Image (cartoon, helix red, strand yellow):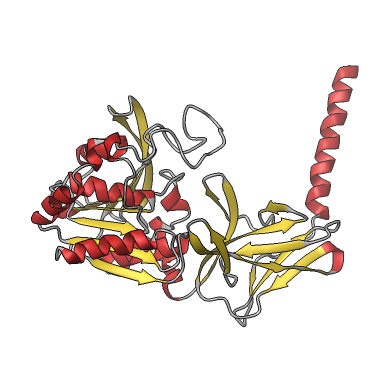
Length: 397
């Protein structure tokens, strides 16, 4: 009986604590998009000495690195107001786009605890918000027919275990049982996984909206996991809740690129695809752009459309895999098959800008057809979302 009374007392205490936290919580709206287009950020830290916010909505800062000068997100100080609430309002209107940010409270980087929209990039968490308007409306859920995202597992002979994909099927796929669809394979960057383009790239919303607007054909989209040593995203595989890392074993050493046909074969066998070169596209960012290049060159009859977003290009040691060897000969063979599109996008301050410009010079020297999209900013998701919105409408026309 005494034991039961102790347990009951503990439960009451826990319940009271939870209710106290609920009712005593300071009601804070952050971020708040104001009528004049500025954005206000707030953080409750009554004992803090200094609070700052850092994000890609602020003017960039220049930083010197061994690889040159690059842009990093700006930083702004919050001012403490009543009840320990710190506040910062941008000096000018924030342009329509999707942005990410973090707070720094006395030296500790933290997410905005009043903003439930949180993104994971490898092992970093950032808070996010969208200023509506223009291209940014493609990143939001609109009143349009929506596709379906499924998590599916395929048997990988190359890896020696089952691996996971995220697969988007367009609105109407379940009803139109006789209709077949083209497929785009969308690849992430280093440290990413099959969730990256969906969570940070807003690829599902982009597909839904472009298809609904008639700017892109209805298509299946396959989001792969380019880390061949990994079953699935962290927390979604047999290793449990491990700490994510940027560079995993067998990263960019040829196995994933060599094994890619097994993914294509799985999708063709399990979905109503148009299983031919003219109805397949592949694209990717950074490491995914690297994978796109070598998968396309080594399988010139598999993809008619290829997109490289801020792509890594060269290989320091081609001996690690035959797939990286005979680059010029494979590039010539690739273009001899007359692909419909090789599309390249890169920002002027991207640390891979020179590699991309040099690659384009090689293409132009050999009169290889391509499209190039150059804009500002660097190696960031803002650019990659733009590139996807530019690339998708060009497919399967």
